[in-house]
Image (cartoon, rainbow over all chains, first blue to last red; front, side, top):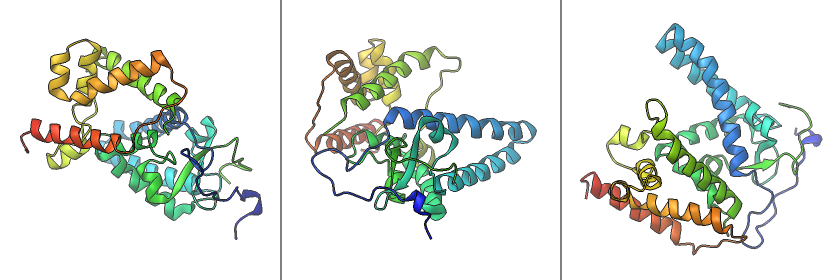
Length: 154
Length: 112
């Protein structure tokens, strides 16, 4: 059962030309991704220094665990997203997307990246500011100021 | 409705990358995963080269890599200088630009 403290404003039908609610900016999402990339890169790099194959496997498993657990948690925040005050929420309910959809979101990142990151840039002109992996997991990334987090990771 | 502030930031990052990347050690660049996997270029292939050459005023090389890069640099400069408060594009502009860019790249890599 969902913790009542994580109840979020429910989905509102779009009005006008803009998104249906507050959305995280491109800049904050970019910096959050850089922070997460550095964190995961440093840890993976240590194992790469020991052995390339070991480094690849550790990096892959660590990235899956990190993104699935933290983005699927009630807060929907990785370290980078927490630092930038943004979070992942369900597009319809405003609640957590859960671990299953967070895993789908991780897979979706590969699709977003396959055409020179076109799926990431998509948020710049998308009505709901969604990347392709946001669409696959049916989530939106929002500012914490509009959708407060009680505990991290929750 | 597009967000001019978001696009201004993205355009600024693009221009800064276009200026900085060629002078960094090893000239970092993004290798297209689609092209690496399948040989097929994607709609954004050639853009980093095009933007880097445009900001250095090598327009011939920029146009040869991808004409969309020249347009993106001009659009970024316009956004940074004119700072429009509102920005609206017809819905068909982005799909058309991406489709045209893809056709150009498919032709450049001899698929068309």
